[in-house]
Image 1: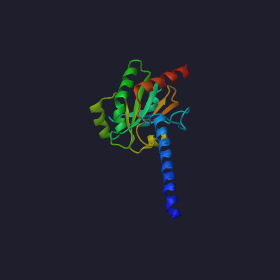
Image 2: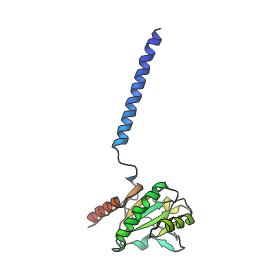
Image 3: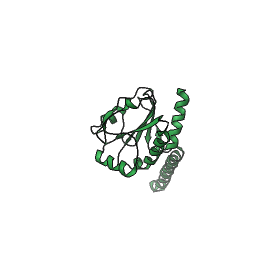
Image 4: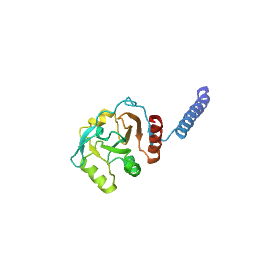
Length: 185
């Protein structure tokens, strides 16, 4: 009989312990930054970006180094990626804000997707920036991209200054540019 008396107390302690763990987990989730857009560390930060060379969606040869002299947001995306769909209007807004001054641009890399899908995507949703089809995944590997969307902000000298995992928004990109310009003078 003594075993039966102690068993309910043990179960209560287990339940209480599980409740404490669950509350702690919820507190962590509630107080952390949104996973929608997270600045992340990268071994590339502060170093020259790997050269990106690829075939554009219209068959042209595109090189990252051709864009030197302005900030470049190197954006890895896929047409099947829901956060990529959500961030697309913000990328258009960012591109349009900088089109006249020509001080920043977007360069997109198709991640694990077909070039035909990307052509349709841009035809339907707009977007006026170069897009590279990364058929073999070399560009993604060079930048250590695990999945879309992921973006790298590269300064006018070709140095990687920020890595963003998750979808971007135009306001956050503008803030990153202002911070970079303040540092670079």
